[in-house]
Structures are given as C-alpha cells and as structure tokens.
Length: 101
Ligand code: SF4
Ligand code: SF4
Image 1 (cartoon, rainbow, N blue to C red):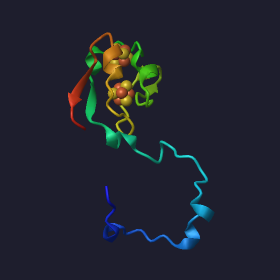
Image 2 (cartoon, rainbow, N blue to C red):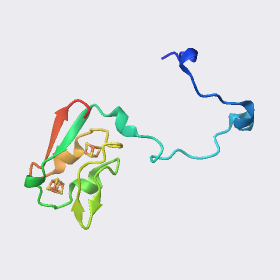
Image 3 (cartoon, protein in one colour):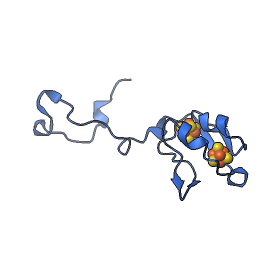
Image 4 (cartoon, rainbow, N blue to C red):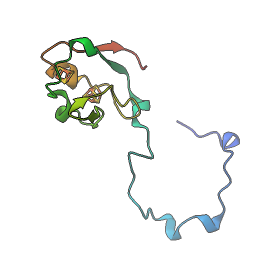
C-alpha cells in the first residue's frame, strides 16, 4: 500500500533519527494494539463459565486476563480472534462472532 505523504502530520527531524536508521529497541505489545488485526471476535458468556482456566494458557496473545484465580473478559487490544480459546472451552462459555468488535 502506498503512503500518502500529504497525510503525514508528524514532523521528524534528522536529529531524531538514529545513525544508519538503526532500530535500537525491540517492539513491545504495550505499544502496539495488535487487536486491530482481529477479524472475528470471541464473546465471553460468564454464566456458562466454570473458571476451569483451560482457555488461558492456550491463548497465543495472552489476551485472557486472570484476577484472583478467575478469568475476566478478553483483552481486545491484543486478541486476534483466532478462536483457539473457544475450541478448548468445555463449557461453551466462549462463542466466536464474525467481525471485529
Ligand atoms: S475454558 Fe471456558 S469454562 Fe474454562 S475458564 Fe475459559 S471460558 Fe471459562
Ligand atoms: S480468540 Fe485467540 S487471541 Fe483471542 S482470546 Fe481467544 S485464543 Fe486469545
């Protein structure tokens, strides 16, 4: 996809650029909301959940937060909608819906 240079509003001076444009630090999921890429969306049905926590370790994006040994709703800033959590849930407490929430 071509970048429309007329829409770039941020001014970056040469003094802000690293020597040789080296990338000096790794990326961090706190800085990148990879949930923007999500195509489908898991829906948590709390009434059906038995808190077995099977869904938590299988999530490749660590998008199922746990507080006091209980899972909470999804972290949609990072969930990519792969559906693995819905597949492993033995209680039908996660349903996949088409589309990004
Ligand atoms: S796998 Fe299903 S029942 Fe178990 S904690 Fe996750 S949502 Fe709840
Ligand atoms: S849909 Fe995939 S990325 Fe999102 S919470 Fe479930 S396992 Fe994690």
